[in-house]
View 1 (cartoon, rainbow, N blue to C red):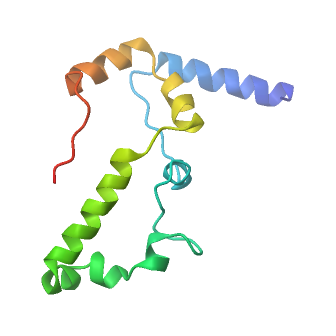
View 2: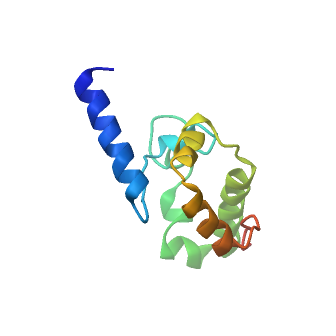
View 3: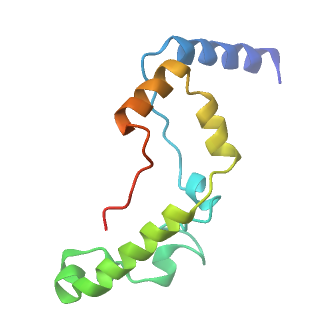
Length: 116
């Protein structure tokens, strides 16, 4: 790592350490690496295999609620079965104990459950 990049990384680490909260925005690749298909892409995306007008529109919902619910349940099951990867663990390392305690308090130590 160059001196400039090392200085920048240390400055960012100091900002994170002093922050009261941090938001991290990632791309779809974070999910894809855990086996959750992205919406857009070449051959393995959701919209390359499914018609968004049938599954993600008001008209699709009105035409076939069971199809739409079934598709969303399938997606929720994929997410529920996914395992974290190195990127998730790297983000978790940014979680200082003071935030971790707030997170546990907010979730009351229970894993998130699917609504459907």
